[in-house]
Length: 309
Length: 303
Image 1 (cartoon, each protein chain N blue to C red):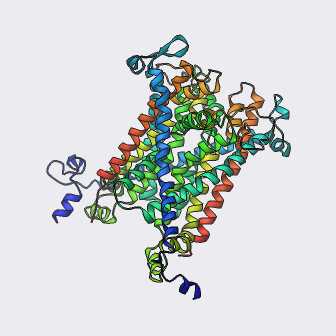
Image 2: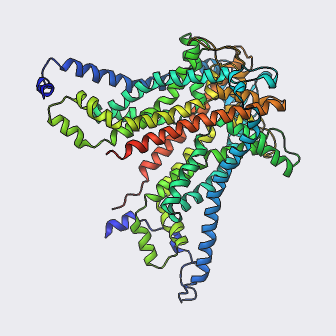
Image 3: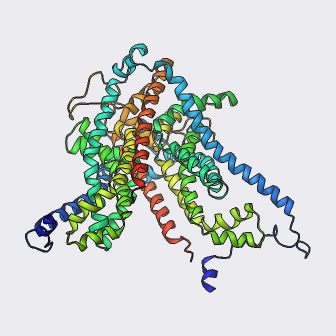
């Protein structure tokens, strides 16, 4: 009994008079309390509706503005001073470079770190420190990663304002998210699987490689895709490292200068001339479609493999 | 079978080197995350220290005029811009987020919740530059219709779009906290004759308070670090004003402004972005640590 008293602390608000007997006699006032309840329910529903309606309004507004400029030419042309001739070719290529390199850099490192933390790490202060550090890194504002990229990749390592510097910056930004998602996926693998493998004489790495990772992989991939979809929408850190806003050529090597879709959108939104705003909206529609496809594939992946266990 | 037989001695000296190499390289992966933190601290401090050799720390931290061209480095004006937008965003995301969480956890059927919760989370996945566009092209024109004196860039539209952006953070994390409150508590309150409203607001919400507070702090931290929506919608005029219809400049928007401009690298003005970035980093770090602490320390443990 005493444990329950300890768990549920007496709430000082219990002492207020709204529920207490009035004038010494208890009056349930059911009708009034039910009315309050209905009002409250209505307010809560309105709050949910606000969120959903905001999303719908945002999508409709952007689509309405951007639909007019969408065409194959828009996707294949370089940006231009003339709105009628402008396109997002170099921005799309830059974003593709980012996704590709960020995956190559962040995925192995992130999964490796997660495997270490879940399967090998001893329970000591160092592991706890690593874990806290990763949680904090996930909360660092993206623009601070931009400052890191500027100081370390652009200046210190001399990558310049290149595709590589941008991708390395975004990879560090994505890393904690990948680690946390991969850890959750690995933790969800039942320990009976590991024990069965050990029981057959497999070593630790054999167990991880042949049993833990294959089972955890759909979860890891889902988390990674979601992390990448965050990276693809990032603008601020790339502005920091000096990704340019006007690129009229294809970036073909990792050392080329580049732009990405969100920066192109930012640039057009900032422009005072109205025709460029529609171009920005067109770019947003393309960006949102890409994100939608990535998220849908993550959800499909999760649903497909979720039933297996 | 033969494969199992051939590898049946996991403790043989022959295979141990590989196991050790793998363990070590995985450890290096995990330890790399510390290097990231070291890198962040190094890059922020190195230039900040040389900045403070020329500008006194006290004038930086207590000055109220931010005008680097005029040699005035009072960071409070930028901090103020960040805080007023964060405050406005929380005015929207706080109440609406909690109310949404209560609806999803206490009123909605599982089917409705399974559709609505991910739908709200889509809002958190939309790139922030899109919110900037939405703020300038949709919210500001509406504000200007209602209040004709509204500036083209104004704090209110930035606060509104940031509020919408962090709304799912509050609603999702708070809903998780509410859903984790054991059923028995609700049933005990119903047994005493409480209505659903009374159960939700006086039993379930207080019991989940630590989770709700933690979600608030995380949302505040996210709003403080938010960059593109604010840089686009709120403009670039540092100002200590209570009028949300005027332009203000946040710490993040200032950093973006300098990186877009042609300030030479290494100049005193350029080094301001590291000092401002350090302030931003320390504020969000403190918020995140606080939120983790609250979740750990004040988590109600039932049963």
